[in-house]
Amino acid sequence: MSHPLTGIIVAMQEELEVILQSLVKERTVQRAGMEFHVGHYADRPVVAVICGVGKVNAALCTQILISEFHVQRLINIGVAGGLGPMIQPGDIVIADSLVQHDMDLSPLGLPKGQLYRLEVFDFKTDPHLLELATQASAQIPQHKHFVGRIVTGDQFVANPTQAQQLYQHFDALACEMESASIAQVCYLNQIPFICIRSISDNANTGAHMDFAEFTPIAVANASTLLQNMIPLCDSVPHVV
Ligand code: SAH
Image 1 (cartoon, rainbow, N blue to C red):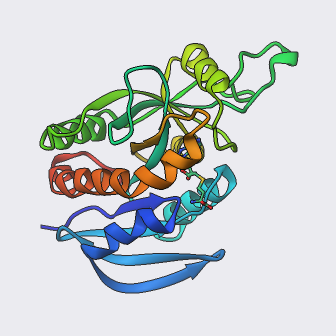
Image 2 (spheres, rainbow, N blue to C red):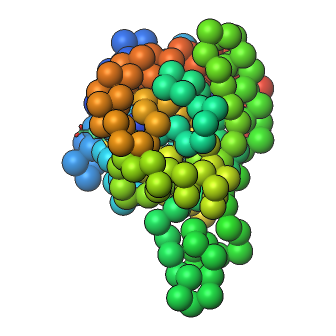
C-alpha cells in the first residue's frame, strides 16, 4: 500500500532531534538555508524539517514543502507557552483554530488578528487530522490534552498581562511563533494541516526559565504523540 507524503515541520533543533531518532533517512535536500530530511517515519513517507523560529521562516518552509516536495498533508509539532489557568507545562494542546495575534489592522476597523481581505478570521485545522491527533493523545493518559485555539506572533511571550490578554481576547489556550502562518499557507494551497504543541512554559515572567527546563519534556511528549498518530493517518483523506 502506498501512503501519502506527510510534511513534518518544527521550529527548533531540539524538536527535530527526537523525530530524527525514529526517522529512516534516505536523503537530505537543502533549500533556502533549510535542510529537508526525506525518509520514512513509522514506515510512512515523510519530509521533516526545521523551519526556524517565527512566521516568515515557517511560511517559506511550508510553501517549499508543498511546491517542491509535494507533501499531501502537514503536521507541525513543537512547544508553546500555555495560556489560562488550567494549562501547565507538559500538557498537550492540539489546535482546532489558529490566529496571528500580532496582525493588527484595528485602525482600519478590522478586529485584531484579522488578515486583510481574507474571508476567514481564523484558520481551522483539518477535522480528520484533529480527530486522529486527539485519539493519539488519548493513548498517553499521563499527559493532559486540550483542543482549542493557538495564537501565533513574532514574539516570545513572557509577560502575565499579555498572556492574560491573549487568553481573554482570542480565547486561546497557547501561544507560539509559527503555526498560524503555516496554517495560512496550507489554507491558500488547500493542504490538510494539524498543529500539536506541548507546553514548555506559561508565557509569564518566568517563561524563559520554564522554557529551558520543560522544553525537553515537552518535546518528548509531542514526539510520542506523533509516533502514535502517524500510523493512524492511513485512513485520512488527502490531496492527490
Ligand atoms: N530556543 C531558542 C528560542 C526559541 S523561541 C533560543 O533559545 O534561542 C521559542 C520557541 O518556542 C518558538 O519556536 C515558539 O513557537 C515556542 N514558544 C514556546 N514558548 C513560547 C512563548 N511563551 N511565547 C512564544 N513562543 C513560544
